[in-house]
Length: 509
Ligand code: SIN
Image (cartoon, rainbow, N blue to C red; front, side, top):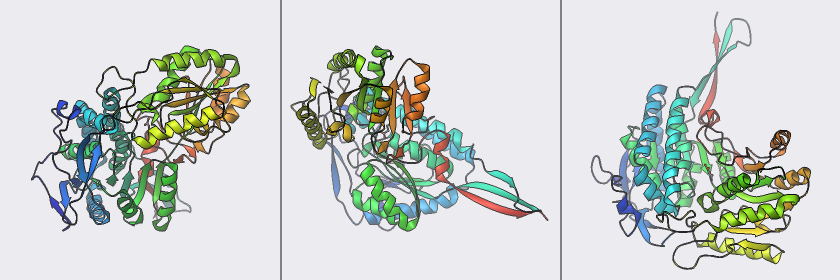
């Protein structure tokens, strides 16, 4: 253990009591019994600084706890611990690594009520989504346990007589993981389970707005038997932790989910040490509705993909593009359904839409609505911030939105505003859908099977939903093209990026 860090709480210390979820659902019970980070299998504070950061509930503006304010020095200590742990973890048999990540996932499932409560509280999600995210997070444990045992190499005929070429896949080393607030647990486990299953070790910097889920994951990692130093969590000063991860040669890969702007900075910063990068960045997802679609079903799919997590997902629908002949009928169908969506606190069982993460999002939604209206759009539903405590914005539908000029079509929204745009022909709809530098997800609804193939091929996105918009799962390759990033998370494609390819030439004579 680094001299800079001191253990807190004694052996077996658990800062979260996951057996009693109700205590975290409301009021002032601090989420964590002590502001500490998890480094080298131990809960630690720093001798350098005792500063802490307050974390707020976006539904009530109440402070729900404090986290440790670590910086560069503490991050370097975590990297050193992960580097040491890598030397032994990479030699552990795949079936033992598999057992550890599977157990980690099982513990998440068992703790789904408690962890879902903490996750909902810090993110403002409705509890059904918070608990659902914990189950989704757990599924990566099971999935990558399977993949851990299926990392294959190759044997190739040698390049000249009397040789054999062998290709091994070896774990890449220590991985720096930087994750967002919109999915405080799932964006961690989808990369961390892959990395750990492959034999890597991890230093995680979770989002400062939603750190408690990450720290719960650390507690469960310890309980699952993931050895000391394999999974480390550092909270605190984002820029210092981020630059320590980027500048360190010992970090051999950065896995980042977040904005395109920060992704580009990480890409540039990683050049100096030639790190590998996994980047899952912003989107601007279109949803095309063709005149031959099953309209009620398309409306349900569109609304699910738009308003999940209050519109704050990278694959949220950003723009609905609707064929002119059905535009009025479909817009009314959508508007009527959206009117019925209740906004409310995470623990109000009748609420379908929770809070957004903060005031800047509320202000931004108001700004894009105002911009669209000034350019000729009409507000069909919503359009305003919800007065009172917390950060809420009404689920909003805008019609007659000018696609080429309205901000809500040009940029990623990340909030509960749905612009509805007209198009005439399939060619025009596809051209509008592709008119973005983002390329994460796109969706369309049609009942014509030939059009299903044509449009699926023509859309320039890493993920396409055709007559189904619920595309996230551990078994699928999640990721984008163009400025939406590099690499894939989940599926068989998600583990290989945590390995390096090593070619060995054997002489057989
Ligand atoms: C994201 O918003 O980046 C991911 C959402 C998901 O996994 O569905």
